[in-house]
Length: 189
Image (cartoon, rainbow, N blue to C red; front, top):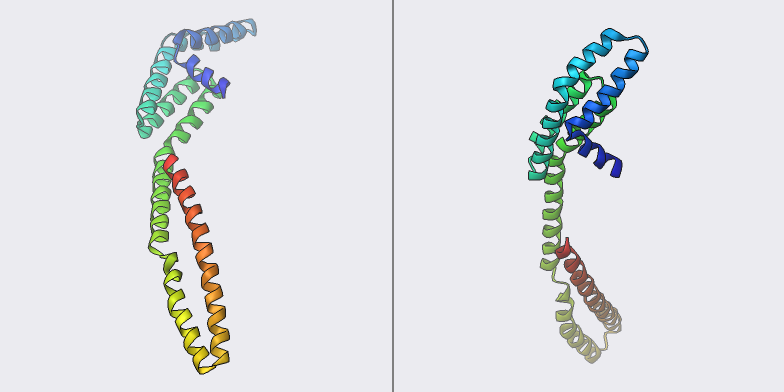
């Protein structure tokens, strides 16, 4: 991460880019590639300034959150790096531009996911889990009535229903506690 950050910082400085070109031209001259060295020297006079300018503009747009413009300038800088035969830098800038270009879609996806989370948590609120509390009184009354008539099957079924309603109430309370924790965490995002 630091090397990527330092590369971007280096690319913002034309002098650093020129120094890199000068080192390469010296090597070309040593290797007897005089014509290629001359071409690179000529390009080295104007391209580093343009490259640094494009990178600075791209970073500015990136900081301001205009990722489409940032992408455009990173890709322009990549083309300039290619002209001065800085293939690795060009590849890096092209990748950065393409990556930054995905940010609007990623941000949109993130926002949609947050909305989906909010929607689902509000749906949970709408599902009244405490409705089981309202079942207890009628169930107990039905058990009493069934006892009066000595309807054993109904008493057994109603007793199981009452037991399940109590269990549902306990789980609803536990769910309410978890729901509260989830909402607190969502609010921190």
